[in-house]
Every structure is written in C-alpha cells, then in structure tokens.
Image (tube, rainbow, N blue to C red; front, top):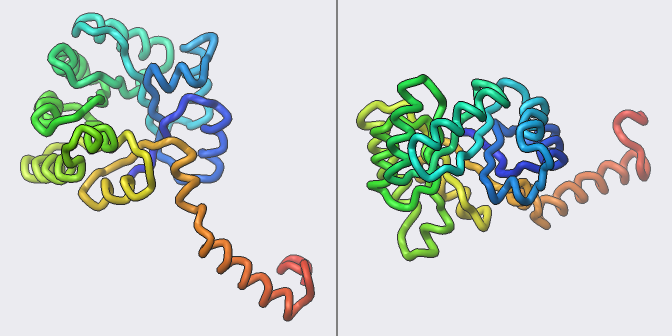
Length: 226
C-alpha cells in the first residue's frame, strides 16, 4: 500500500513528509496552478528535495499529441531528474506516448482513467501506475470500485507489475473502498488524509486517558516530569 499526496504546495508537502507515511507526490496542471510557482522546474526540484529520492514524484505533460508528450517528458526528466514518473493522459495519443516512453525505460503514470477498457490499454502499454478517477467515475454513473476490482484481477492474473493509483476523492470512505477493492496506492489532498483523524471518538479516548493519568500523578504532569 502506498499513500501519496496530490499537491504542489511546498508547505503542505513538508508537513506531510513530517507527519504522514507518504510514498510520493503527484501533480497535474490544475494542482500546479493552485501552487502558482513562478519557475515550474525550480519548484519541482524543490519538491524532490523535500521528499527525497526514495519517494515517487509524478509530473504531468500537457501536449495533446504523442510526439509532443514524449518531448515534454524528456524536458521534465532533464530539468528535474530521471526518476520522475511522467503522467500521461490515457487518450489515443497518450497510449502511443506511453509505448514510446516505456521503450526508453521511462517511468509512466497513466492518468485520467474513466473506463476499464481505457485502463486495459494503459496496462498493455506497460504503464507503471494507472490512475482511475474514483469520484469522477461515480459522478458519471459508473462504479469506480468495480473498475478497480477488475483491473486488479487482470494485473494479478497476467502478472503485470503495474500498480493501481486510485485518484480523485471527495471523502475518506472512497479512499477506504479503493484500497479494499485492490488499489495498490492512493493519491489524495493532504486535507483528506488529515480528515482520517478528525474523529471525536479519538479525541475523547485520548482525553479520558490523560484525565486518568493526571488524576493519579497530578494535573499537567507528564511522563517526563516524573
């Protein structure tokens, strides 16, 4: 299981690295716009510096044709580093770009996945990650969990090394369901990960424990004060 954050904001990334067991960072043009970096490549190098070499960094191309996507991928790898996962939209042109990039040994994340056959195309193109858009698929009246289940079944059946990177969430339950259906990884905003702990029952349990301790040893007297 990999927990990845979907942001390009340096402060959020620094906090997430400190507090959460995150495995990487994903971004897309809309995410970059929210961070508004003046120098895109310098900003992404800063992201890499924060997360280190052991975590994955996913950066998306914006060209619409395969050759343009490959050219942009080369520029990203040149300006940031060769470990970057190039996010490629799973379009007709995008699948062609995936094939070209994989022939060069470049890491690929297939994104903007809404349909199972679309996912299968990315799988056959040997994408390293495939990112189904969970909430958006549901909004269109389809079942994202069934897509994840069937895709995971195909991956396991045929022995692919591809991982399912579930994306586009509006709530913690969607994240939990995606993992339960077989997603290898999640990418979500930092705020959604924080929401996992926003549970009054958790707060009450901790408060009750502390009150019992203080009743025994004195108010505000911690373990290190003994």
